[in-house]
Amino acid sequence: MTDGNRGAQPERNDGSRFDRLPATPDDRTVEGRATRREVIEWWVERFGLDLETFEGYTFWEKGAGKIWAFADEIESPAAVEGLGMTFLRTRQEHWKPTTDAVQRFGREADRNVLVLEEAEARAFLRGADTDPAWDGDWGYLIAAHGIAGAVEPIGVGLYLYGELRSRMPKGRQREFDPRQE
Amino acid sequence: MDPLSRYDPLADDPAAFHAACERPLPSVVRVNGIKATPERVRRAFEAAGVEFEPVGWHEGLFRLGEGESPGNSWPFVHGWIYGQEEVSAVPALALDPQPGERVLDCCAAPGSKTTQLAARMEDRGLLVGNDNNLGRLSALRSNAERCGVSNLVVTRADARNFSLKPFSGERFDRTLVDVPCSCEGTVRKNPEAVESWSLDHVEGIAGVQRGILARSIEVTRPGGTVVYSTCTFAPEENEAVLQHALEEYDCRLVEFELPLESVPGITEWNGETFEDSMRRAKRIYPHHNDTGGFFCAKLEVAG
Image 1: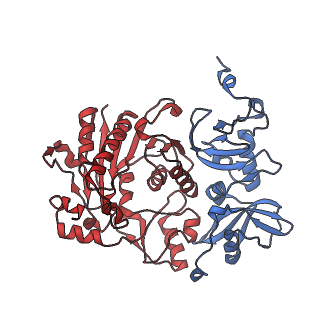
Image 2: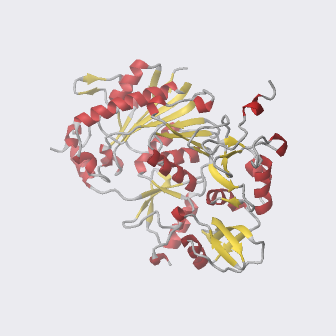
């Protein structure tokens, strides 16, 4: 049976399990679901990564629009508690990368990376808005800073109207010991 | 009476053993190889004025100065480091998983060893982190995310009944069996582990450990590797559990090297005798390397 897989696919998004993304729009059976090609292209275009970065990865949707990247393969649908890492938020007008993915893959990015001064980096980490100099695109950017000899991503910022809004999740926000200031 | 005195005949130097158990342990961090190198962490710590010193037997471990809190620094935010008791880095070394393999960590949460396994696999292949407690699973997920682990599948099951169903029924190349235990070896961090000690508790938890090890052997492929570890000295939870597995399953204990001091597993306890191969297991007492106490054994499933 050549269409066995397709026949077994659910027709509606089921938020309680992981469903593998279709490879291309022609393979799509669930309305509104992003494709593997679209999520990779979004990352590659937005941040200038190599296509090969995601070569061995499989991509999954769990919950409406929440895309996960997994470095291996398992059967779909997968009724498990976690699968790789959260990667991208889709099913909304402007797709949004996750803090985990930006920290994991953002080091290789060569565009839409805003490198902050140390005081701004600490403010960003606290969850505060800043107004760094930036003449690039508006929208979701990688906020980064220089540390130990190289640029390291911190998280996702939303650049709008001359302002960088920190999108650091509550649980990842930190206020460092003033001794280190 | 100090429950730890029951191990005086086993510890090569009982006075040194008790003295070490009284001393507090320093905070230790492990460098997460998925996101950083020891050299970069060293540079970041130096720039931030964090007091630290390397651990001689493992290049990716740093002992922190008194009062340093690893959670409040850029290296932690970036997922470059993980706070982990140094001796608990041992079982991942013994398991020695390779990139691309299928690996199970059956009692994974909160994830210090799981994230260490992922790094040793270079974040490639299949790593399954299982636990039965939802709260602990949420800690596992968040620790793995911060460390940038992308090859981990998290499952929730009692490890005695772990199911291969989500994995096409295919068994694992290597399984880490770091079981819940009486935690006597953590006395330097948690004195209550010994204050609330009872033989009933030890014997009860040993029953659970036997079940977990048995299921872990079943889900590991012929020729595959199982590492059994605890942070307790109690032979009831260590050699006796292994003896049960050796009698019930087609598997054997194998030799392995560790870069820190240990003594062999024992072959007799309270009138019970164990196979001679039990000497291939390793007991690590706190006075050996100035760490917590630990037990570790490596098994090969028959081909």
